[in-house]
Image (cartoon, rainbow, N blue to C red; front, top):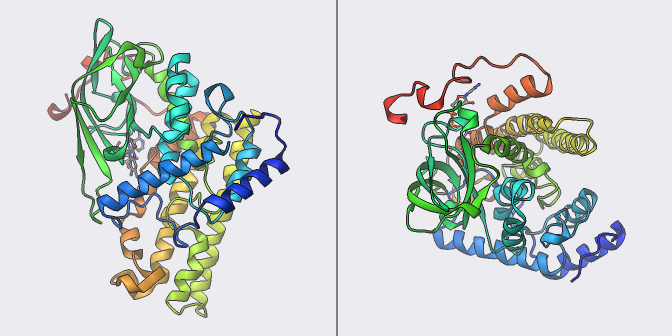
Length: 422
Ligand SMILES: Cc1cc2nc3c(=O)[nH]c(=O)nc-3n(C[C@H](O)[C@H](O)[C@H](O)COP(=O)(O)OP(=O)(O)OC[C@H]3O[C@@H](n4cnc5c(N)ncnc54)[C@H](O)[C@@H]3O)c2cc1C
């Protein structure tokens, strides 16, 4: 199907609607577990789900419904956020390629579109839109994830190649992913923000050991990667040498935009990480609590969080797109989304009553609420913590004084570190 940048919204809606009705399955269950790292699938089932996500993405691509806001030169449709919104609306209650959205479309593809060379964009963006490449972000390290600029993973130049050594951690799903976008230190003799460079690298290669980390609920989706003499051609460097923080700053803006990004496809009503407000009535009904005034209060609160989150995301998205808000304002949405998701998950647990503590597979909507509750804080940590988002809001959005740091003007090699992190 050829791209048509002039396609009006109504004919686009018709096209999206007929594709969705003809080809996509109903969404599974009424309550999303997205973002909660549930241990509800065997490895075989998870790999099958990844394969289905790739297949659905390919179907969307072939139908001209992938990369709505991506330039046509890179396989996208070159349309507008309003078209993406229409697609999200038509996808309501249907499956969509969950695992490809974040971090593949944003922040990774967003970073490639902004900083990649023409050759890199031609090589990877169409492949991403066809569902052939799933990307991970290699940012956090065992020594700490909030201080991204303190990366210790090192890249040393060797002719036309770079040799990378170090470790990255907390990459969700790296064991079934294809490419990593990696922030590495290329210069230890300058202050920390000035000695970083970004690279892209295939994950499945000799030199990268992917270890899976078991969480307290049994999920093994988190991974840690050990990079030992990984050779990366210079053509796979993203942005200038030692200018990785320029890339990194925008990378984090794209990361905080998450479901608010026009590069992401997410059915309306399901863009809230964790348990959505629309699931609450079903949970209360399963527990026989629809007459309970306390339960009704909780259901109302969860719906309010959904409604405010949607309105806030839209407002911030429009504000950034029209230049009335700085792009750092994405931190406001990220901050709210973190707290709201944790609270909704807590509400789901409270509504489940005793089944929140002990349940069987036959408990339907009541099952798993206890496990979700144990993992509720992931929404305040993943994508950068809510504390760091609050810092961005105060310093970069409101213009308040910057946090005091002792390492800003010191060569990174002279910054004191504990023995285990040097
Ligand atoms: C679901 C999920 C998915 C993730 N996916 C990825 C991924 O794909 N790729 C990746 O690289 N990482 C990923 N992460 C890791 C995540 O980015 C880090 O966990 C996060 O940035 C925090 O880093 P940390 O855990 O090392 O905590 P630390 O940085 O050690 O922070 C510990 C605590 O101190 C607080 N703190 C630290 N510095 C400050 C400060 N200056 N001001 C105020 N408070 C501060 C933090 O907010 C936090 O509460 C993911 C994490 C989760 C939960």
